Amino acid sequence: MVEGARIADLEDVPERGSYLFTVEDAFTNEREVILVPCKTDPGVEAWINNCTHENQRLDRGSGAAMRDGELICPKHGSMFDACSGACDNGEAAGTSLPGVDIAVEDGGVFLTDDNYTYLRGGGVEDDDGPDSTSHIGF
Image 1 (cartoon, rainbow, N blue to C red):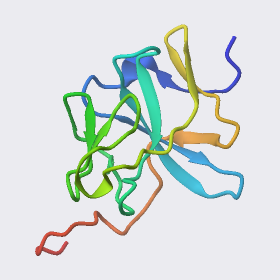
Image 2: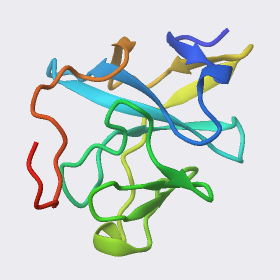
Image 3: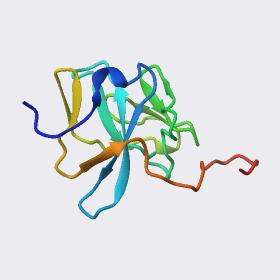
């Protein structure tokens, strides 16, 4: 039996997109994490929900954009491999997304990372709205 908090059912992770949840680190900081589909076992990976180039959420609450097994940063278009977290293009080239340890057992996804405590499904409440380089303000 896996020791750790159950995050979601494996079937809750969309084929293209992400499942968003919130954790707390040792300093009581809330962090967003995304589960994304991956073609290698266990079929899903977990990453901190931030582009490595700039403080930009990959999943803004409606699922991360994905194409051909890569997560796409909505601000500058850098693409991160969903299985390794590595980026080889755009502003974030040469970096990797920080991973979060998970395990899959009996159709469930569990948080097994000793650095984080599971808080809830969904994101951190934030009223700042999306960040964008667009000339149109919100």
